Length: 146
Image 1 (cartoon, rainbow, N blue to C red):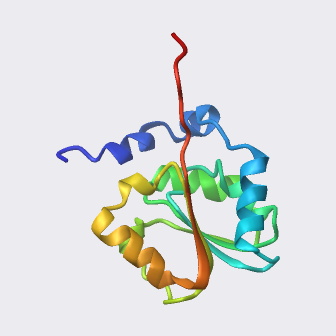
Image 2 (cartoon, rainbow, N blue to C red):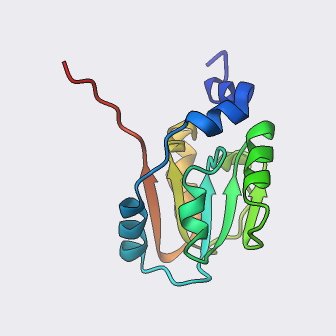
């Protein structure tokens, strides 16, 4: 792709934060129940943006590493969640991330996993997850009634 379409969100990080929709609490409750996550679990977020899904995760008292390649989006994310000591923001793409093998209880991506090259994405997630860890991928879906 000649233009990195994913980086277009960088042009207005505050607008992105203000207008990007969040996710329902029931989604996160279902994910946590399925994954059987305990407080203190180590979680990796791929493509955090400005944190539309981050809030629900950190409210569960987990340790969260959030990956966000955009400089402005990372800055907004850090500013928004500065009071959460168990959140680490890393400004990098998932494919560049050097995480410890079998370290994560869960890896999730909210409307961002499609930006990761598929030849790498699933194998890398598998390698980073603990045995019986959970990979949770979800997106917004918009429909138009005609």
